[in-house]
Every structure is written in C-alpha cells, then in structure tokens.
Length: 148
Image 1: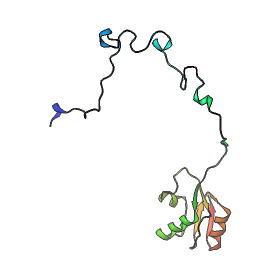
Image 2: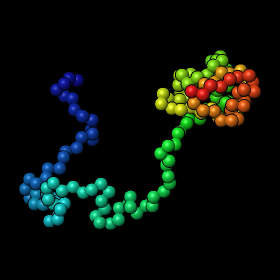
Image 3: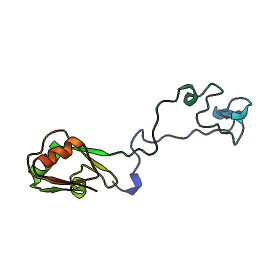
Image 4: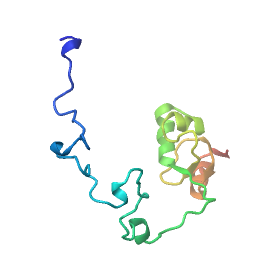
C-alpha cells in the first residue's frame, strides 16, 4: 500500500447532482426547481418553520408551562451518599470541592443536602443549602453544617 492507491471506503462518497448542464443530462431546463414561483428564482429562502402557508407547528401547538426567572436550581445530594463517601474515603469533612472531586457536582452547581438515608459518623458538611431533615440528622450524630 502506498499514497498512489489510497481511496475512500466503498459507499462513503457520492457524486453531487450536476444541475443545469443541458437537457441531455436529465437535469437541464428548470434545473430541478419546477416552473415559476419564488422557489425557482435565485436568492429565494423560506423562513424557518414555514410550511407553505399551512399553520406552522410552533403555532399549532399550544403554549405550556412556566419557568420563573428567579428560580435557583440545586443539585441534590442525599445523606446516604454522604455516608457512603465518608466510609469509602475515610472523610470527616465533606465540602463542595470533595463533591466535585467525586463527580457529584460540577463547578457551577449549587448543592443541597437532602434527608434520604442516615448518617452514622460525625461529619462536618459544607454545602449551599440543607433540608430540615438533613440538618437534624447531621446534628443528631454530633456533626456540623455550614452554608456556603
């Protein structure tokens, strides 16, 4: 094998349509554009979503829902996950950097600790928000919380 006999894989390339090269080509005359009308002229383009005058999909389908602009979205981390981390990596403090390191949050996320599961060891937890049940559970075993 050398550079002179390299070619693309079979079926990976197609020849483009040669349009407007005479009647013998089968694509002469109107050059696949049909007769008259805007679509046959040069420079013609339709709006995105235009359906030939039919009511377009984005106007046929009703508006649904509401997104409040001031909503703060948190990534939830449950107590059982924190306990698992603490046991597996022998941790006493769990902060945002630790959660990032173990793939539970990314750098622009806000973390909220939620109350599913239970904490058995004394942990110092630092997060952006805590649910009431999570806060009680952490403090019940002698741990502490800190809001970032």
